[in-house]
Length: 598
Ligand SMILES: Cc1cc2nc3c(=O)[nH]c(=O)nc-3n(C[C@H](O)[C@H](O)[C@H](O)COP(=O)(O)OP(=O)(O)OC[C@H]3O[C@@H](n4cnc5c(N)ncnc54)[C@H](O)[C@@H]3O)c2cc1C
Image (cartoon, protein in one colour):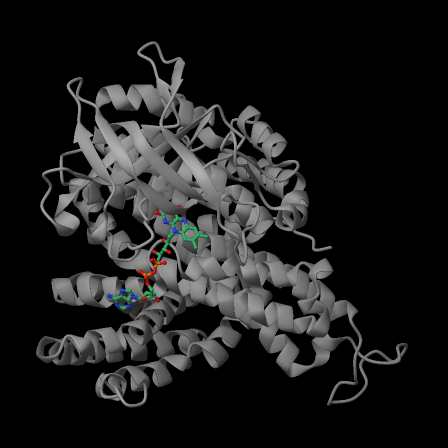
């Protein structure tokens, strides 16, 4: 059976020692009281919830899955899921970072970010039920009318109702412009929605009294394509004027998908058969409103893989210290045993350190993004709000794709540490690999994230935001450029920062002549950009560790951090050279292949 210990110390290190988040929060009036002590105290309890309440249900939920009653269309979640959800609600956990105007606790989003990392480590399938609600909450609080906010947000804040996102149809996944679900206006201002959605996460369940579906549909007279899509609230039960639940709406689960992982989460086929819906935002501008939810979900999906990377690492580490096989190449280490523990073997260490480096680098990036999100929403200075929003927009596809690809690499490496036992269910490792796999696909596949990064976020604004990130790298290089001890961390990012400018210009030029060049290079490009970002945070973490050691701090945490930083720059970061080379090899070798692919 796997185990899980919340990585509170590392979260505290990133928040308080590397990023000094409290200083940012002091500049935001609504967070003036969110000091380090408060944040740490909440996260300690949050860690207990994840490790004691939802983690024990992870394997049984995977084994049991969800069941659909075809007569009633009701879904039963695995044993214990509903009770765990009730504990989550009773503990006030849904409200952590929600607005006090709707009953929220008003804590910074970074608290929720760290809480959700732990929930994802503990049980990704369970976590998706409440997790999607946060995205739906964000979309409604940004684009909903006052009446919609008053009707739905307090119940989503308390956790009494959950939310979903209903975009995908059988013939339309990546290309939402192909959507067919239609919406007909009614005399009372509502709409009748008709269509079939598939793959809807948490689309039906037994945890709450109502489910608030956010559904994309097309008005009858809408222009074709993505510009004719509008967003609607379609509740499972109609909410009456006094807030009580009325009639059952004509939206139900027609089937559940049988899938590779996240078995405990109901992936529902949703039949919408003339259901009552209420428009959110403007007609034909549904994507604008839905993008608020999609961006939140993209960060959330990166966080799912971060959680799985951490828990896979913890278990592989414990196993590698315990499992004895063969002797160390450099001489016997465990003289009292018939063989040495496998952690003595260089390649086992490489697998462990790969997961550790991706978990800790990913955590620094995720926490940085959560602070950006708070600053983008609530900072009193308009320029800070705008800059934070732009930076977050650049980093979102990196969080989504780089963290989930790394999760794939890391969970597989950790499973490998277990040898054949990793392939056997009882150790739990194969579940981490299976559960992580969807993270690279949904919320826009990682290819689509790469196109978004290179095509829209970088080339689309002539590299302006990328240059701003480059400036952060430049500042660190300037600060530490003469510090010999930092050279091994600073030189690689300084060099890659310079190369990135030329690399980007070159791809932009080739892409201008032939857009397939962008498509051919984008995935490699995102991975290079991901390493620049991780490299920057690893250099900052090394900087703090060196400073503490120089000041006489003997906490082994700092030496461990330096060792991991060294591993990262020596063994993982250098793949950027190969990636730039493969990106530069161009589109011809892909597109002139009709015979090969005949
Ligand atoms: C378990 C699960 C849960 C899900 N949850 C939800 C949910 O809650 N709500 C929801 O609405 N949807 C959900 N989805 C749907 C998910 O978001 C889509 O599956 C995903 O966006 C991809 O769409 P698709 O499956 O139709 O693939 P397609 O769009 O058919 O893509 C197939 C392949 O072609 C590639 N491709 C497509 N277009 C391009 C292009 N322009 N350039 C390069 N490559 C391209 C893709 O990257 C992919 O590799 C879920 C899916 C699963 C499996």
